[in-house]
Image 1 (cartoon, rainbow, N blue to C red):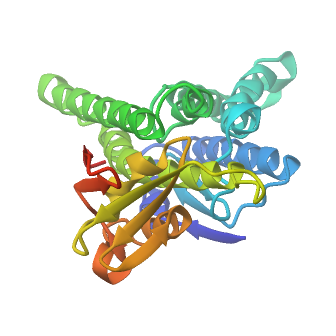
Image 2 (cartoon, rainbow, N blue to C red; image 1 turned 180 degrees about the horizontal axis):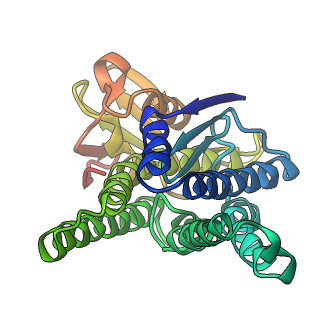
Length: 293
């Protein structure tokens, strides 16, 4: 398993140690570490081994092998909910009488960081754990593309709101809250990235679940797209109960090839590496309009 620490993460914790206190820095680091370890242990307990872990100032990004991170239902809820549950457990433990023996600055800052991570990660938006938990359940009810788009849009709105509060506080009280600006920016950037990744991973899982029985008849949809078309607009056609087959120029491409190409390069084009089309033509001549993701 690869471990990556963003330079901004190092800068963030050093800034806390310099401008706040070493206790605040230690409390923030421990809260982040416990949160991510809970995710990893939950995944490991379910038989899912992570490929890499990337630490950011406000959480970790755990990547599983292709298609494995698309865990839904109770499995997905267990992995996504493990982090906030660990933060809640630490709040309970540190509220017990024995915890009063700890240095008070450390105890107060650790309690504050665990409470902050618990509240933030339970917000029902991507890329936070609350958004992932909703995705695990909503996957069975709503279209993948619409659900991922709504949750990621919510993350961007929350991020923009935090930035606005940070700037408003700087103007009103002449005191800049750098944490609000950084958290807001983090949510906006990662909400956009998580939307595409989560959607494609779950589409791949969908394909694996509906591998047809070779003896059973298969319901198949046929589409044709121009060689200069873009692959992202194929997604709505794939997120269906019937299998899809795409004709790009003179070549035929199946669903799994499309998803794998998108995972490698979401902005690729059909003629070169299978890219994005705005219009599909089904074999009955009906034109299907697809909105960009």
